[in-house]
Length: 237
Ligand code: TMP
Ligand code: ASP
Image (cartoon, rainbow, N blue to C red; front, side):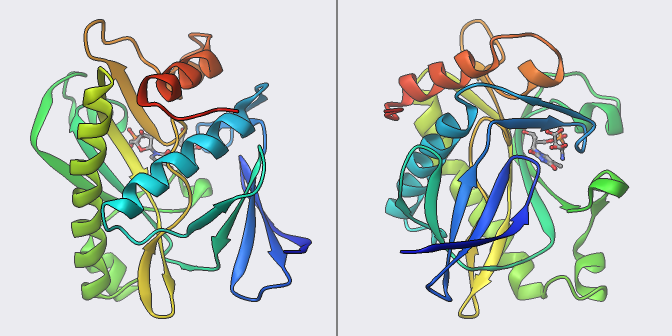
């Protein structure tokens, strides 16, 4: 497959066109961003770690019957993905309270949420990803009721698979963000799943092993990502 021009440069990844009109190459840079791009640093090994982590998780989800855009791992930083038409919302599932839900609702960090919460956020850094509901999504034409129902159902099915996978590795899947897109009219999981877009705590010590280490300046960011990868059996080389 021939890599062509850079089509889109996000905060941590770039997307390249290829000679196949239905495929892109997704390139994981070392850039690490938080607070809607206000804090950006290069962290050594980050691109490689997240590319391999994402490939490992996406294949586990595919095995569990979730349609995913990732097809092939090309090298340390790149994978081949299906070209999706993205739905411009982010789907967030929470098993334990942390982050923005604590600020918004004035609740303590670390409360078990049973059943898990499900929220939509508009993908818009300038507006700091405001929360939106089903009615906004339909009225503004970002998605249909059917797509909303499917994104919610898939996000919760993914929760069952990943909560169990991380639990077996001694980790709590606190929360995570997913993005979906359309391929030949079908909803498919897009973007990435890595410690950049989820919260993972050690079950015993509750040590944070995700991007909160970067957001909160706790250090050892990539070392934590590598530890999670090692614990779930994800190869990094
Ligand atoms: P939040 O606590 O900031 O709402 O985020 C919940 C989870 O979703 C957390 O693991 C981070 C992830 N997330 C992103 O990675 N990017 C985003 O733009 C949003 C809104 C959430
Ligand atoms: N949308 C946010 C950002 O990447 C999420 C985060 O703070 O990680 O800037």
